[in-house]
Image 1: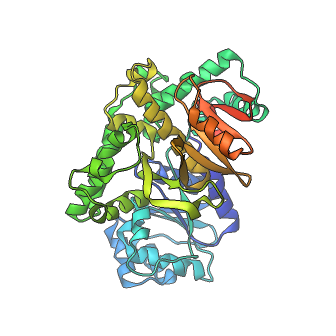
Image 2 (image 1 turned 90 degrees about the vertical axis):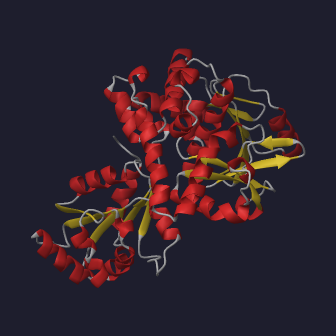
Image 3 (image 1 turned 180 degrees about the vertical axis):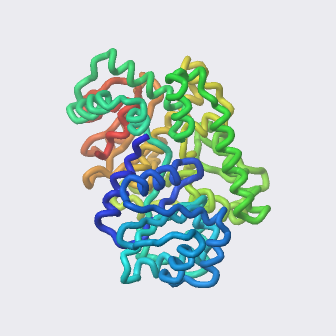
Length: 431
């Protein structure tokens, strides 16, 4: 399946001498993407899993000199490595902090070594690196679950993507039959999410959602919870899982600002903050900060004590909440469908700028603020066709923004300086 990050990998190949590190949650496709990229773009390719090949992992405990490392790999694997045309993929690199440190010296070497690496919870590893992380010596890229556009690509809906983009730009309504088709695909994505294994299973079952193996989502969540204990001390692992499991309950509240008391009755920030930071660094969870001023830069006006948490994948949120797919497709659970919708929009917007903000004023709340071409734009999210919102109207009256965006199941349009964006077109925002 095509992933947008492939274009970034090709740019790295053409322009950068630095080693490349791909960061993302487990099961998001890091190994697959790098494996395919290396096979298709280099004459010679060597794959090394440091978690399984302990004999190679031990090399880094003895030396971090690139030439010596390569020489010992050549001996162990009985190969000849030509730096000019060979790429080496160190997978599960998080098992060796010294291996990560060695990337600096691969970057500084006079030989044109081509190194790529990935691993489970690399974001956490970097955040808690005990020695000197090779800052400025590594190209870091992030891989997230497949967004809605990548999902459409996987389904072969390239013409539909083109049509959506054209109507986003023109604000002209799509033909109703195409609009309804796009909405149907969106509702299925709301159930499936963007984890590659689940979308692959959907496609393998002729895109019949009734035949999808939803246990795959449960297995992914189980692996996440296992990682929380594997890579942390026992007490922290428990707190990590408590926060993660509390997110459906947090989001279902009328005021879904995160509260430690929802996680556990005795939870306090001082005890749980490091666990929250672990989850954020792992990319399992996304944070949406309260901006106390709707001015640029939004980051300068963040209230650090008030924020919302979203899961990094909407399909995993559905699974974690134990919500049957028919409740979403048949509109049997409008309340939690709204929760999934907001989480979906958060994931799509996060891909644009790697940060999320919401805004409160007087008695009102704006779901998201996004900076577009230098302007702060308010964004309102609705899960259905009913789009009346006192909050957005009051915001417009008070602040007179350049424009506003309303996301819902309604077709494209532009009226009263409000741009109507269907839920299936959120990936177009900020393009």
